[in-house]
Amino acid sequence: MSLIDTTANPPYTKVELHGLTQQIKQWGSELGFQQIGISDLQLQEDEQHLHTWLAKHYHGDMDYMAKHGRNRSHPDELIPGTLRVISARMDYWPGTAQSAKQALQDDQTAYISRYALGRDYHKVLRHRLAQLAERISNAIRPHTYRVFVDSGPILEKALARNAGLGWIGKHTNLINRHAGSWFFLGEILTSLPLPIDTSVTNHCGTCTACIEICPTQAIVAPYTVDARRCISYLTIELRDSIPIEFRNAIGNRIYGCDDCQLFCPWNKFAKASDESDFTPRHRLDKSSLIELFSWSEDEFLKKTEGSAIRRIGYECWLRNIAVALGNAQRSDTVINALQSRLHHESQMVQEHVIWALEQHQPK
Image (cartoon, rainbow, N blue to C red; front, side, top):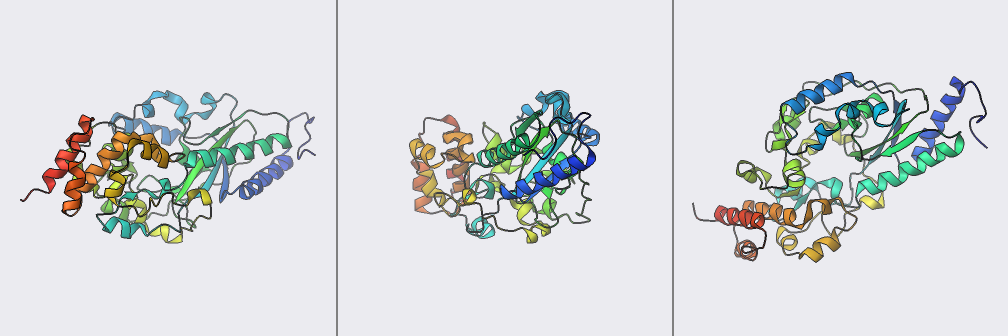
């Protein structure tokens, strides 16, 4: 039986919409989301912030950030008929993984951003959100909707903030007062005029821990990241050579960087995820740099199947690890590993291997 009278005319009553909203949040919980919130489409201040950020070229080579014009801050122009955005939060902190801080302190261990240790979150969240959207559709008459998980040009963190899921911290990640920031976001754009949630106030206060800890000083001002300096950008988004001035600061981080979150006081409230999909695969939470550097391309493709890591490709994988090996303590094993790639077919890999070997030359 439908939750709402599908023949109702005029449209749904406030009581009906309130009841549906409560059901949506319950269904979201049943599907593994820790929080569901609903927002309207008001993003004027965020739109201006985006324009300022783009004008300063802080997006680097991420041309897609500037591509879609008004659509990014006007969801109703992206998907005509959109009235509300249903934002969903799913925690991902892998409780079974090796300590992140310990991994960072061991220059022989490869550090991979905690979000990428398990299955690609895009697949996990998209499937769950599609199930949620289907439940909504089964409960009401046909309506316009579309599911997003980093798959379209929308300001998801601003929308999630407006939906009450948290506030945008000085590191530009969303922070939840009771869950920290180790979570993924996904959205359903819908034509349903659902009641909206109350946005959350900012609780960063005078804290500047994230700004101070950033290895490359990429947080150039509170709430502003220059992506061109960010290790996540340099190791994931960038397809060219990593600028020399940032290579030492990268340390052993071969895919992404979590420092601004690791040292955020609010993450003392983060809870480990019980999602098996986010459990580390192939010992990626504690693999040595040399072990990963030895992977053939076939091994890379096989062991990153269904993982977000695969998107950077094998060439950038070797590039990143070469930099990390250049930052590792000198040993015959490290030198031999680097020399084994000295004549790699990729000039970019060769360049980074040569740089790494130079770091181990006597000063």
